[in-house]
Image (cartoon, rainbow, N blue to C red; front, side, top):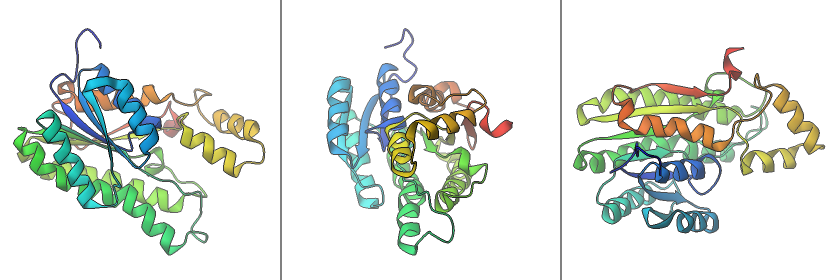
Length: 255
């Protein structure tokens, strides 16, 4: 734990917390003094991560497309840790399909996980955060909320929606002392990125090199670099910050 624990006394639920950026957020939160419930459908990685983080972390299986499971995760956090102060709406799925290739079923699944879960996760957290005297919600958006690309049509749509829901919720929940912000990560070296490139590229190394060459810093972000943004927005250091999106992309969207 750091010398001045920035999240001491806070209890958080992190959806999609078993791997990648979500796991990095969980680690950083525990380092900064928070108690964390990791909510995911990846039971093996989630349980292993929670055990490794010690008494201040636990894991719960949670399909974020099911509103009742989100509510149950929040209730467990409150029961186990005494409160729910922070919600990280991080769970998401990608699709590399363009408009013509995207099926109705695929669209509905991506919307359910990437956007519906953010809206209803926020809605269900309100009562818990009121009992805690307020809180902070941080939604995972994407640079794809800001720029276009030939593929990822449904993913683009949902991440634009996440940013819009973030702004709406921020204004609506000021009265409840609940701040709502989003983080737009750039390309990050996660297991999801690796598996996606391996599945779609004929030459993995060449593809990764070409993607890195598109980055102004000529590299991808490390998950911990993205997680630091969530620490700030969840902490009292961001007490006057709401309705904002924090872009952490190594300059990708400004060149």
